[in-house]
Length: 220
Image 1 (cartoon, helix red, strand yellow):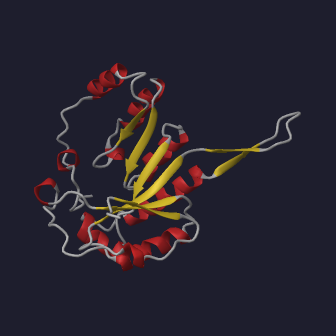
Image 2: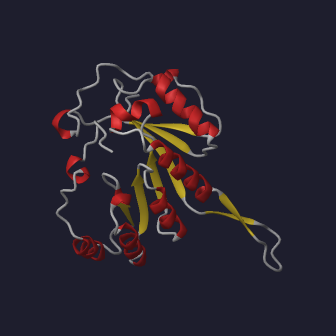
Image 3: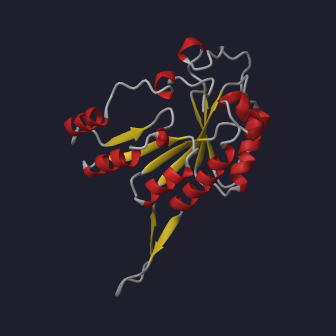
């Protein structure tokens, strides 16, 4: 993906200056000082060494968060199956008809849907069987995850977000759907995107069924 509003162009274009050894040396120096590590991007699941790095972080005692666009469900499944992640934030970029103009491709919507299903299943509560002499059943959540959308009001409007809310309802999403107002524009972004000319009126959004809306970077 090449999201026009992306504020990490160097990372997206693969201009990292850190090696795996650099990253692990830094993490080892921060044991007992930091509690968690976020694997982000660009798209972190494009990196072949991601599961191994997550495994190393876990062995050092860190909690692990993944930021992803959901484009590589096969990698996400491996990470979930191996219990390498504690929290996932997945970007819901746009309705299918706007993906081409916003992220540069429309072909990744089906992988996103597959990843959403994987996360919904992984975050559902498991009922733990009662042991001898214990009558109370316990539930244990596997992971926690959120869905989020970055909004540039000239690119996504209330009708678009309403469609996305309905999509998540049909998918039986539970949790919080975070709407994040764009922060960076101009040369800091991949598409040199302009400052928005429009405003986004969140008061016009419908109240979702089964999950909550959260807002980031909006002025109260």
